[in-house]
Image (cartoon, rainbow, N blue to C red; front, side):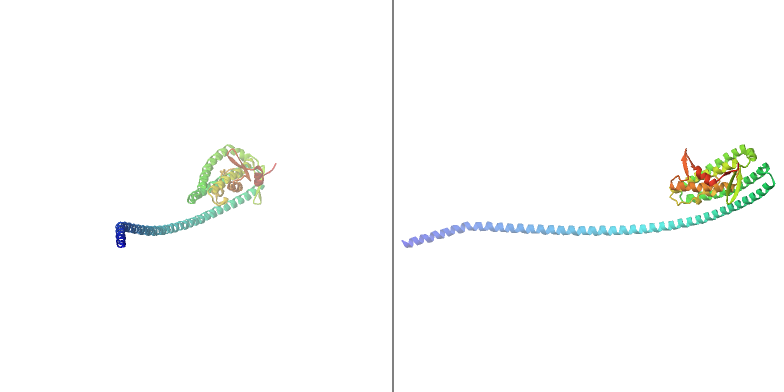
Length: 339
């Protein structure tokens, strides 16, 4: 009985083991397959990660290469730009140097012209002085207000004025060319207006003189004025012309100063053609040209300062005209009545 029981136990154990082995073999195969699949998946993931890393490295290298190319191109462009700028600067410097040289030559020519004009004016002043001295001597010997004397004096004035006018015409052309070269547009425009109005006033004064000529010759001297340490006498016509000289001078000086300020040019009333000419409103009648020029410039200087500084210290503006103040006019002209 014991033998049979043990045999049965052994047989059962064998059968159980066989059954266990039969069921375990397929489970191990599946597990091995899953492991193999996961292993392959990990390898695939590793390959993808490596591929991503390679792609990332390639993009980085590509970006660096593009940046280097861009930087190299930018450097080359900057280099060319600097070279072009250097060439432009050199050309500009050469142009500025040439312009400076041209301006220097113009100033030298202008200085020579001014000196010649000043010498001419000095000579004219000296001649007028001698003429007055001679006239004073004649006046001591003959009664004053002699009609014939005034006729002769007036003829001399007209002759001198015509000669001076011809000289001024040459200076006009030089000044116009100089202003255009200096690109002083406002001052050039003012000078052209000055010249046009100058011609109109000359014709007006000529007609007025023709109407009043005989009255002037017979009119007695009733005013006295001083200039350069000497006293001079004139009648009502001469006094009115001298007042006009100061007023015209102030008006033209104001407009010239405005023009230089608009051109952003340095203040210099003596550089203005109108100041150098000083014949605006004069046609060779009633008073000597040097006297008229002197009082015109006195008004011009004050007007130029007001115009350049945009103020009205010496004059006023009304109805489109600039006029010097009466108190300033009296101070400048200092006319004394002889009656």
